[in-house]
Length: 91
Image (cartoon, rainbow, N blue to C red; front, side, top):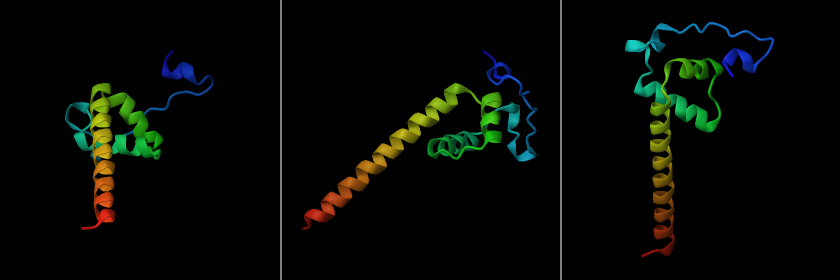
């Protein structure tokens, strides 16, 4: 099922991108992928950026960025817990 078929009665609008959104080769930059993953993770991804991601991004880039973000989050939580436990034991 295509994008147009998913919402009967609504037509897909053409996406207009700003100059700053244009990366060489029509692909998303690493920063744009990271920002999109972070915004989607916390639930504040704009519709405009979501559309841009689906049209110009690759699934591989988003999967890798998501895995890296997840790993960083887990390591951060682990480190904070270790520091808090170490501080609470006292020396």
